[in-house]
Image 1 (spheres, rainbow, N blue to C red):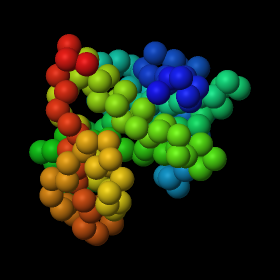
Image 2: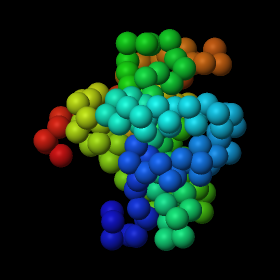
Image 3: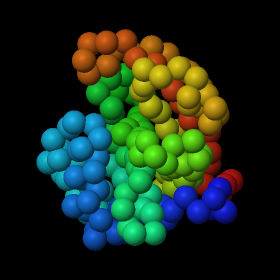
Length: 161
């Protein structure tokens, strides 16, 4: 996928210079207060190898064009299904280029290198994550008391990537 020149994928735990831009960008995309993202991202930078983790893709001008996070639970009632991918977003002008798939694959491999062989996500989308090998697992009660689809990423073990 790199031959498409999609940008540079950055793990925030190693790049504190992107902290302000990242928490502001995610907040603007999801309507969640920036302080929530800032707190989680600072925890990522302090802990380095645990959860949460945050990732962004920046273009040649160092503007964020995509990103995602991994948190313990993305506001659903199945606390046993952890960690959870959250906040995946690709700028509309950059969609259709496989960027979401690059992010999903990178996050899975990075988590495997940190000792996590399972990854879940909740969504109201049907059909999107299946394209990337994710499997529908069950319906869960989401944070807004709505039923949401819970997916499990394909298993990946450290060293097999």
